[in-house]
Length: 429
Image (cartoon, rainbow, N blue to C red; front, side, top):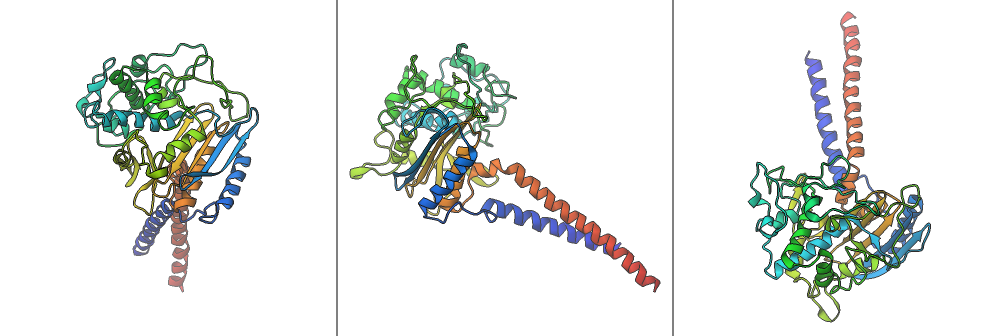
């Protein structure tokens, strides 16, 4: 019996050591290799190009930025050519731009970050719940910490299909992503955890309209996108369409449906790598001493947006409208946003405010290629594993962890069986 207890304890210690070392090593990137040597931009571009060729997207626009300036890019398409000015529907990346619009109202004194969001909503209110709606503040909605449990995800409306009004969409989104009932509600205690909420950003879209009296797209173009030089970007395509819109493809390379959205703030910004490069540049000091924000927002407001407001598993993951992808040696974070829509839209933008280095990847026809390339850039740039890479690889990580634990347990059982007959034999002698 004593022998079995020793073997069991040794097995338990081995399991704890394996689990700790494996998880820490995974989070710290011990098992990863960067695509290229740090600082070797041509080598990184060559490796990223190989990823693009292997991924076979329908179309893709890719821009690398160093010290605030575009340095290299790749543009590929199986059909109509794309370039720096081609508009892509970028899905959830629009939340980042929406957050900038909300912050212009905060700076103007029209919105208080720590006031209940319902203070500013005239056409819709949250449904009754067991939680205090006064704690559902603008700040918490921006950072996905308001206790909203809708988990939206919008699938969009087909061409010719009626598009809901914003109040109708908030009450029950007819285009809710699969597995969601489409109801925006407070289902958890505000401020106590992080839950991604597309519905929260639809509330912010309604807030902007109700506070300004303008349509969401009109305000965003006037107050944010046009002043930043994002001249082609829009949340609402004109009825006649636009020139140089990237075709939509599914993962098989076939033409796909161009869905439209009521929740444009959460799911349907149209922008280009050129305009997103300008957005990144606006976060940095500009020519002739221009301050970050370029007059649209104060530098202090941009700093507040990238200050950590939400944590998961002990890591800072979210600011106000921006994802915190990885810590930097300067004490801040690489920030930006990603987007995913059906059937196969994937977009990613990341940059380091301290260095001015960044990356923009927009594509259709592959479900994750933009995020993969941007995640590799983060590790190449910082040596830290990208937040979304950790999330995307969670299943693989847990599977490898479980296999290792199983091997240790089987080894413990084998040792117990192997030692038992040998001791019995020695006793007989």
